[in-house]
Amino acid sequence: MTSISLFLVPTILAALASGQTLLPQTSPKYKETKKVYDRLIRASGSAKTPPKLLMTAGMPQGRDPGLLARYNGDSVEFSEHVYDKCSTAKGPDDNCLSVLLGHELAHFYEGHLWKQDLKAVGAIPDSWLTANGQTAATPAQIQDAAERNATESQADYAGGMLAFQAGFDPTAHAVTLLKAIYAEFEIADKEKALPADAHPYPELAKRIAIAENTARQLHDELYPVFETGIQLFLTGEYESSAQCFDFIGRTFTSREILNNAAAAYIMQALTEEPKLAGGYSYPVQIDFDTRLGPQGLSRGGADWLDEAETRLENAMRIDPAYPPAVLNMGIVKSLRKADAEASVLAGRAYALAMPSGHPEWLAQAAVLRGIVAVRSGDKEGALAAFQEAAKLGSHTALLDQKVMAGEPGAGDSKVPPAKLSATEQISHLSATPPQKADSFTRSIALRKRTALETSLELRLYSGESWSARSIVENGAKYWAILLSTPAGYKGATAKNIRLGSSQDDLTQAYSSPFRVYPTRQGDYYLYTDPNLLVFVNAEGKVAGWTLYNVAGMPGN
Image (cartoon, rainbow, N blue to C red; front, side):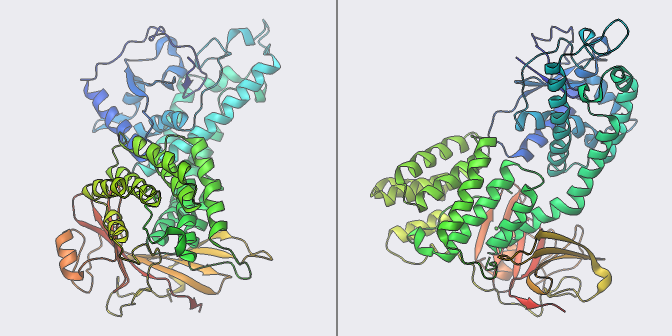
């Protein structure tokens, strides 16, 4: 079996034949590391069985940097030496631990396993050096080292994204930790005898640049676009949502981003051609998507489904066992009336969702099984599937039971126009284009203008107790304004809902929402009267809200 180490050369592992001893799982150091490790795994959203975590005691055998942290196919080995480097008098720093744990898990999720050509782990093989210290590596070995170098850079980036999505901030620690390890293990000195294209480790300056650039992209660009894509999906602006996820996908291709873009395209298809659904509400799944269409470019439901299928195929190539992508591919097949394929995919999505720890995925898979069954004439099987999904909390299943009973209209995917409230404000602001020039922070070009398509940009704004985002077409027309509460917001809604208010308080004040979107972290409550999107966390407490305006407005 091959392995991938942080620094970075794979090796054959035989029950820690390197002589490394393991810390017991009862060790406080192991428990703290495992807590961070499990949080990273949950943030990945993957249904794949993750590699087990092993923690090795003390300094790596032979002072080998490749044994500090490595993924070997069925486990991630993490050194107590790294834990100690991430600790201060106040205890371990979870942000620091997330740097190398995220890196190794990125190898797993990105499928980074390759053939074993080198003898040593994380060291420059003696066989590569002649008596005078010059390289004797073969062209194949040099190519292998170059591939490893590139893959390590990719894992640095993907691991940083994973750590950020799990709620850690690895940036500053990545720089400090990398500098310390490169110096302690003299990595740069050992590579001096090798040509630059034969270095199995990326240069320290390159890794620092990756860490800093990842932070910039995450904090300033990619993550805001991701959040905007989610909010646009929830408020029914599906094509703009897809543009957000496609923008991210051009920089950071992952199964979650591809799946979310596909989900938005599916919903856009259903919005433009509701008859595709036959009246049923399909359980399109995003991992937690417009009226806006390119001017002069007409597209129909089939075109949007083509876009969705392409992205789902790519997502499933990255991870064939990712339940949301399998589920959404089943929906595409069902909408195309490929019932046999849809049935197989619905069953597969259900089986994959069962051990995933995501009851919302299991419920959505059961809904799809019900729709496939009823469209195949099996009403008894459909009813059983819908009832199972309803028990798991699926509102969609209740709607589809009504459709099966002959009640029309429940399958409409279009979100009705929101009633803009004059009294609903955040820090005395309404969901209109921000007027103060000094509140503008930056603009992100989601799509460039061409002969067939208009330009599309995301503008970011912030104030003392608010943040806002807008989608602007051709630099002039505002298609969406999203005004949100920041962390620790002290204000309240027009009906006195605050951060920490209960779910019951919310529904008593605003009645039942138009839709509820369940996620692993909590539920989104979408209201259309007034224009309010509220997030209720897993503890049933209001954790933030957004005032939205998706009516096209001229710019100022």
